[in-house]
Image 1 (cartoon, rainbow, N blue to C red):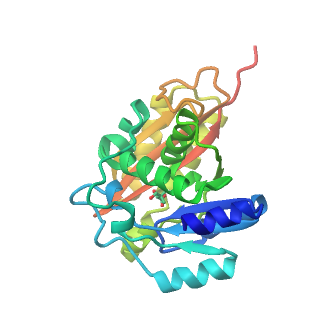
Image 2 (cartoon, helix red, strand yellow):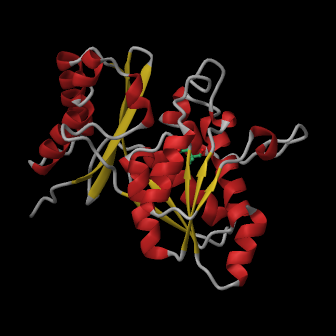
Image 3 (cartoon, protein in one colour):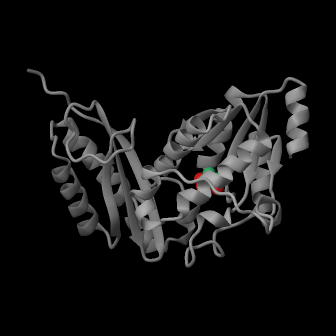
Length: 279
Ligand code: PAF
């Protein structure tokens, strides 16, 4: 991959990279559409990265279907599918990891303490292998996208990071490879994440500024209309990813949540406008 990418760069091609863990759905393929607008050659990586899964998480049962991925990626316009092995990515003597302070340890990081260390490390490796001009990530993993942007800036990677909007099912459920774990019953209830975000949007647009009140309304909705167990419902300032409790003078806030349906953990988020008070 490194040699192929170097050849492409030398012949003047602008490379776009879409890193994935495979089991492609429309969310991934929409990233291909976006990257095609910004590059000459599209590289997609398919790699279920073991270092971002903790002991007891779903690494072994994470859904995989490489032949379907190959077909879908090619049909959508991916030029190179990079499918490295664990041995190639993490040879026995691999000792180096990238860890971001603060932002890696809140929200998802509280529930998955080693997750973002694995994500940052593998993304850094993929960027170094492919050296793309542009790389695409989904807003569905908002904290991941923030961390990657921050890492790229902090460590001077020469790449443009683009974050593409969440793709949703008709009922609002955000597309995720993990949705296949849901039973029919859980699947029906799972759009409560989206509905709770829309409720927050509506409350903020009516002038509510107490995020504690917005959170309580979301929690009530989730608890009364589903059997989902909430890990967190939180609000951050989009530019800094710092947690906030008051909408205050911010024009927009990012609401994020994680809810478990049985063994399946779903995350979602939405950028919400705050109604500005006129004097
Ligand atoms: O979002 C994902 O699928 C993964 O976290 C990523 C960015 C491909 C790194 O393994």
